[in-house]
Image (cartoon, rainbow, N blue to C red; front, side):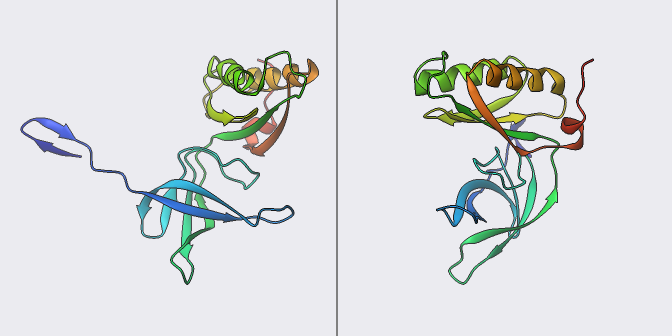
Length: 165
């Protein structure tokens, strides 16, 4: 940060497109925007939509290819966030795709999580200080009630061992 006439001025954040290699499906790569920390390090502003062992705030090293495209290389620092993909059930009582996506986000925001979604697909960013038991409970309740299905994209040891308070 710098100061100009007493006003605090944040330095501009540089955003870059980075790519995760993928296998086992029709897509061979997933591109996401990331905050450039240096020429070879980035921080993710949110979790990607696929199971790539990546969550909001994680820091990765990147390597450019021959064309200058930046590829994720190695996770350098885990943020402690968990990433959960929630897919609206086709006959969900939460509503049609866009309305259902909004309802999913609202339910998790009430528990301190954030996320993004569209067309019935939502990725929930669960912060390390969230009540992981309550988030687990909501996920399981929604699945049992036919609201959605979910996948754990990137989870912590605390997530794996979360139990009732």
